[in-house]
Length: 166
Image (cartoon, rainbow, N blue to C red):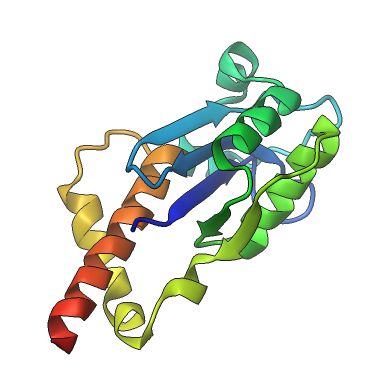
């Protein structure tokens, strides 16, 4: 079974950063992604982070959804489930900020993806992820693509583990 994976892109790293995009890979392998319109109090912007995610402030203003709309969609897709992140420390902070500004309770649990991995998976994780990333036809670095690559990496390393243990 595929774990639910979430990835959050942000305005930068560290103090003052905020979520600008959230992507989810569902158990079916389907992905969902939403750009988040910034709140007026959210002013931090790191040009080097923009270089990574490729989302401009203008794109946020033009295509971003309100924090309430994003929070409600996440709850409708993920309610009552455990969702995994490969960057739990950052993603949990950015999701908490999103839900706080939306004034909506988060109805899913966020856990570290690392908690699912056994020793063998940890050993082959980075190489497997790199191979899958290179083999993908993703043209843009986006949260949903990242979530899907993480989910595929989990499944691929789990398959390898099963084969080795037989």
